[in-house]
Length: 421
Image 1 (tube, rainbow, N blue to C red):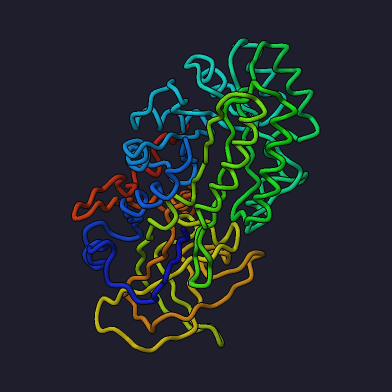
Image 2 (spheres, helix red, strand yellow; image 1 turned 120 degrees about the vertical axis):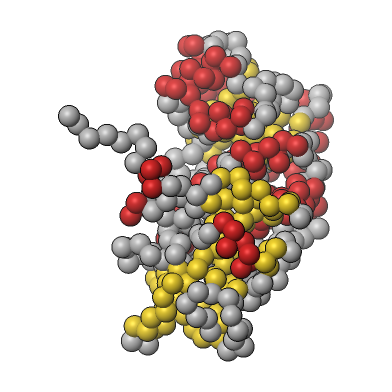
């Protein structure tokens, strides 16, 4: 079962709601999320025993609540994400664990929280094992293993190999098992995530590495996690994920280990971007159109303070125009940029900061430009650079519009600041 998306450069509505009406009601820039797309992506992964959302992709508590109501558990990478999950209705403990804390370090707040609430931990470093073992001996843990290779659409999204900070280096596995035993910590789970956009060649390598790693740990293993990184189509030419084939590879791995260990093993998957990327639309208004030599610019009221993926990774996002007045049938090659006092504030760029153009309809000031597939790593990476307020967030569920985060006010910008004396 694959996902294939078709993108258009002209759009009038989102989920049946007029873009002009959305912009009038909520202002711009505003993130709009389609709840049904999230449900559809969850259903694609139902074959797995546990779907665990990597909430770092989109951690609004309304999104987490939607996940919970659809049977999805969560991964948390900070004490703040644990707090968000609890606020959204997740319990600290259960079977399987509703919240798993996954990181490469414990900051002091996170360690105290994990110990106090008896949260299951996915350890990404030997020091985490030591620190948890000193404070909470006798618990069970998962080990996140770096198998020595990785994959990603950008070097910054590759989470495996010796240049990555993530996980326990595969050659240190035995030492970490001994360290766990020293503190009477039982290694019951293994997690292996090598990066984003995993293809089946790399996936086969991960499955083989998982089997080898599990055998080295032994029959205490009761859970294996396929990690995340499932590809998302951002272009018409992108091929979506064959979910059935993906599951079959991991299920075969799980069954081989079950036969060797003589007990059942739970198969988890940890999607982030896959569940939320396609649900998100960033509505912006075109505020200026400029010619700079041979280049034509559309300048919009959203910047990399709202969506950082293009400046961070050279990430491509489909774009469309919603006309406020008469529609144009003509297209032109344009560069799309934001309002920030920063030359890198360009949405049409490639990795390395190379500015490129996009073929878009001929627009006018006052028309709206929609940056699509923006539901993952969008709002969560926002900043107040240039003292710009955070955007509003809206969840669309059929005919219902829910403002799930109001736009920041000027007073919000300086909340917590003070002048001495």
